[in-house]
Image (cartoon, rainbow, N blue to C red; front, side):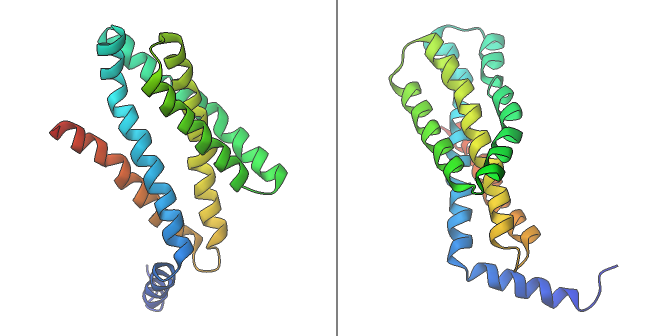
Length: 170
């Protein structure tokens, strides 16, 4: 059961987070990459079918390959960031990799480069998304790390849902 005194504490935590500029910056950091990555992932199978002639099954399989480096690299990214004592350099590197992937999608006409870019995109996601969640928990441990992580994750999930809706409309 919920203790009566816990309700005001939650509202106090929400108020503290909502007045904190760093919290809004981290929420934006979750929102923008999730928006762009999921926009690319939503568009990727169609791109692979139309521009490269893959069948629907092949395009779906190639698109799903993003999850292999994402799953394998996430623990490694956490380990490295623990070893160097900072999340930020790893997240910046992951963001730069993501930008390179998007550039390759725009300028490349090579099937091989596109597949490599999909794999690197999974790595870039592993270097940013999970570490950003950890960083938020660390940054706001005095206010309420669980609430802060949940709120920034909500921003990211909202962003991830936009491309499907907008893409379907377009």
